[in-house]
Image 1 (cartoon, one colour):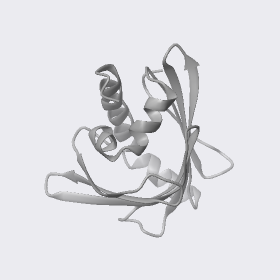
Image 2: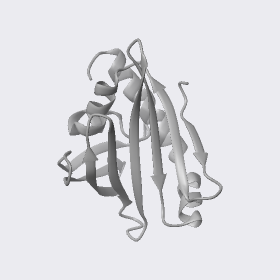
Image 3: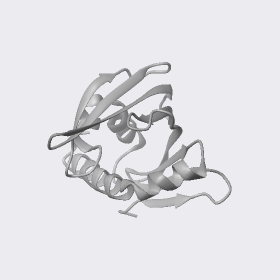
Length: 157
C-alpha cells in the first residue's frame, strides 16, 4: 500500500488514513517526533516546512509554518502522548482556529522492517471533516509520505 487509504467515517466526523512503509515502528515514530526529520517530509511538494516550536513529549506542544511562495500557513497543536506505540495530539490550522482535531497515530509492526501507519483525525463536525477532505489534503498526505519513503530508503531516519 504505497498510496494512503483515506476514509471518512459515515457516523462520526473522523478521517482515517492507513499506509505501509518500509521502516520500523521506531523509525516512523522518530520521523513524526524529530522536528528536523518532520520538516523534510511533511506536506505537498510545493511547500517547505519551517519549524517554529517543537517539544515532542507528553504535554509538549508544536507549531510549524508551511511556506508556498509568498504564502505562509500556520499549524499548531499539543502532544498529549508521544510514546513508542502511538502519538496523540491536537492539530489546528491557524486559518481556521476554531476547528481543532484530535489525532491518534499508531504504528503496527508488520515484520521484516515494515510498518503500517494508522492515523485518525476526529474533528468537531461533519462539515469540518468534509472541508478537510476537499482541501487538497490527499495530495499533501501522499506527496509527504512519498518523501518519507525516500528518507527511509536513504536510511536518513
